[in-house]
Image 1 (cartoon, rainbow, N blue to C red):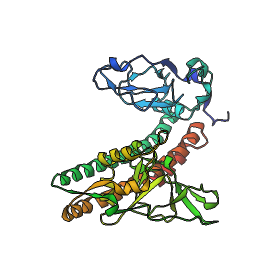
Image 2 (image 1 turned 180 degrees about the vertical axis):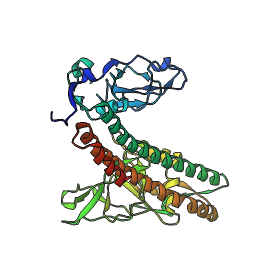
Image 3 (image 1 turned 120 degrees about the vertical axis):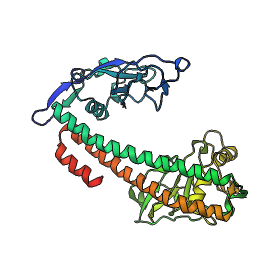
Image 4 (image 1 turned 90 degrees about the vertical axis):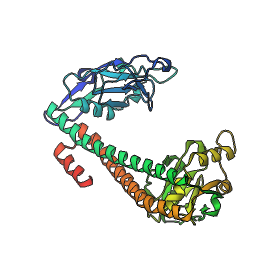
Amino acid sequence: MNIPEGWQTKCLADVVEIQRGFDLPHHARRPGPYPVLTSGETGGFHDEGPVEGPGVTIGRATNLGKPKWSDVDFWPHNTTMFVKDFKGNNRRWVYHLFENTDLAGFDSGSVQPMLNRNYIARVPVAVPPIHEQGAIAEVLGALDEKIAASAKLAGISDELLAARFATLAQHGSEEVALGSIARVNAETQKPVPGGLLRYIDISTVDVGSYSFPEISSWDDAPSRARRKVSKGDTIWSTVRPNRRSHALNLSDDPLLVGSTGLAVLSPVKVGFAYLYEITRLPQFTAYLENVAEGSAYPAVRADRFADALVPLLPVEARNEFESLAAPMREHIHSLTEENMRLDATRDALLPKLMSGKLRVKDAETMVDDVA
């Protein structure tokens, strides 16, 4: 392991002391302020936090070796291990150390994945002096804070729009077929040999957002790349609609092409923000679930999207909502794009900073350029 002058190569066990988390079945959890950190997405909260924060847990039963951070006291679930002793190292740097260390190959389970602390004790890691640990953590932390702040602002804006729409809807609306105010899969994109595209697959679409795809060649594109996606279109996954995979496209990119597994909804008699709002209502999702066909991979035909009954507010109310929502949706889109750039920068910086291949001063310049 080649490391900069002043750094040391140590075994993981010499850097931190790790301990298995504590059992806490769901029926034993009591409402409280302390987060329960599991190896999965969320563990809820409890009225006890036996481990002092800030601290770090590491996935033990699933997501092997993947760390989670807590600013406050917390309960480390038995699906995790937690850092019991940081041995004088910067706590946030330790979190990034686990982010940058692939421990998935140390699976000790015979039936299900399991990470054993004894198996990873001798893993070699590069350790900078404590002052440089702090500087590395500060650079990555600045990016994390910016990403979190933008995501929070986007989320608040989204909630405000939903609340405003609900308020307007209380004054009355009629039910109309979606196909009367929007087109479904209006444009089909034919392959362009030698041309370029940005392909949006179902897997890249999440609730309210999608990953901005890289440019690729039509020669390498899958046969299902057929749905033309334009600015202002709402895209919905036709497969397993109960996952609520839908997003609003506000990217003015002529290369965007979606999968045939997506329903592309284009506004006609309503604004793009209004169309997106009505197609993310719970009743719209329930309708899609009800008309989906198939057992293993339930899917909704395009014509069933057009038949969906949706609320149509009076013209004045629609215009009022659109004048508020359209610029806010554009701003949310800008925040999302910015976060994707910040995420990419962070992903590029992490391994280089943690290995010493990039020093903090140079990394700070890169952060200033992108932030």
